[in-house]
Length: 290
Image (cartoon, rainbow, N blue to C red; front, side):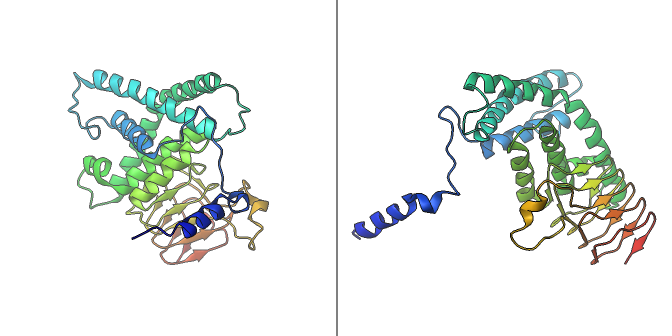
C-alpha cells in the first residue's frame, strides 16, 4: 500500500511544533545517556545477591566462597551503579550547572561508594523485615520462603535500597527503583517515606505508602492499604508539594485489608485498624477502628 506522504508530513510538522512539546521536551547533556531500567534491575539484583547470599545471583555460595562472590558482586555493583548515578545526575542537570562530565563522574563514584558502605546496615534492617513477615504469617514455612518468594519482602527490600539513595540526594534513580518494584509486586512505596525496623506487608497487592509517610517499628500492613496525602482542589497541589501530608503510624500498629488512611493523621502506638474503612482523624494509642 502506498504511503500517504501528505498525512505523514503533516503529522511530523504538528509533533515538531514547539507549542506541542514545550512542557514535554527534555534536552540531555551531550555526554550523558539516560538512566537504564534494564541496568537498574541488574543493580537491584546484585544488591539482593549481596544482601541475601545464596538466594539470588544464580551462583552456589558457601562459607568458603562467600568472600569471593561478595567481592565480585560489589565491584560489579560499584561500576554499574556509578554509571547509572552519572546518568541520573546528568539527567537532572540538563543546563550543565553541576560541572564537567569528569566532575560529575567523580561525584557519582563517591555516591556509589557511600551507598555500598551502607549495605551491612541495609542487610541488618532487612533481616528484621524478613523475621516480622515470617512471625506474622503462619502460611510461611520458613525464612527461606519469605526471602525467596514473598512479594512484600521484595518490595520492602527495593524500598530500603532506594531509600538510602534518596537520603544521599540521588535524583530519579530511587523513584525508578521503587516504581520497578511497584510494577513487579503491586506494592507502591515512595522512597521518601520513613519506615522503621520489623516492617511487614502481608500479600500487599494495591498497598500504597506516600512520600511523607512515617511508619514506626513492628508495623504490619495488609493488602490494599493506602497511606495517602491530603487532597486539595484541582490545580492547588503545588501548594503542598514537599509539605508533610501523609499519615504517621507509631510502633506496633496493624492495618488490615483495604484501608485508606488519609492526610497527616497519627495512628497511635499499638492501634488496630480493621478492614475496609476510611480514616481521616487521629487514632489514640491502643485504639481500634472497625
